Image (cartoon, rainbow, N blue to C red; front, side):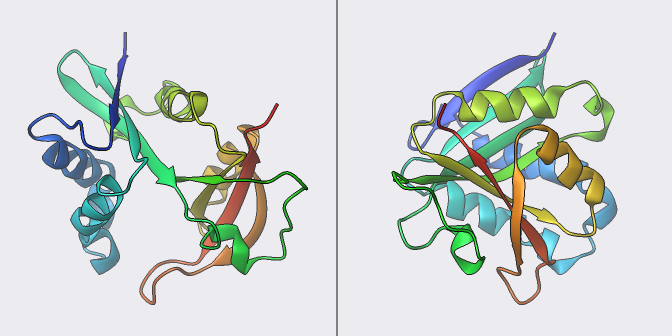
Length: 172
C-alpha cells in the first residue's frame, strides 16, 4: 500500500531536495541528456522557496515512488494569461501544479492520480494550471480525464518544450 506524505514550504525534512532530484532522475532517466531536464535541481530550489509551496510524496515502505508539487501563482503572472482564456467572474487565484511524476517501477498503479488529488484537496484557489509537453498526447489525455482543459500553448523558457496550458476549476 502506498503511503502519501504531505510537505509545506518551510517544513522539509533533511534530504528532501535530494529525494525530489533522485525521483526525477529515475522518472526521466531516458531524457537526462536533455539540458532542460538537467536543470531540474534549479526548478526544485525555485519552487520549494515559494510561499505556499506544497508537495505530496508517495512511498512504498521507505522508498519514494513519486511526487506532485506546486505553489500559488502571483496575480498577473498566471500561466494562462498568454492564452485566449478569460476567467469567469469571481476568479481570485490560481495554483500551479508544477510537477507530477512517478518512478517507472510504480507506474500504471494510479499513484499519479492519488498524488494529484491529494495535492489539490486542500487548495483554496479557484483554478489549477499545469503545463504538458505537446509531444505527449497521452499525458494530456490523462489530465483531461482529471478535469483539465487545454486553453493554449506556451514555451516558458527558450530551451523548454512547447507546452499545452491546461486549466481545471477547483470551485465546486
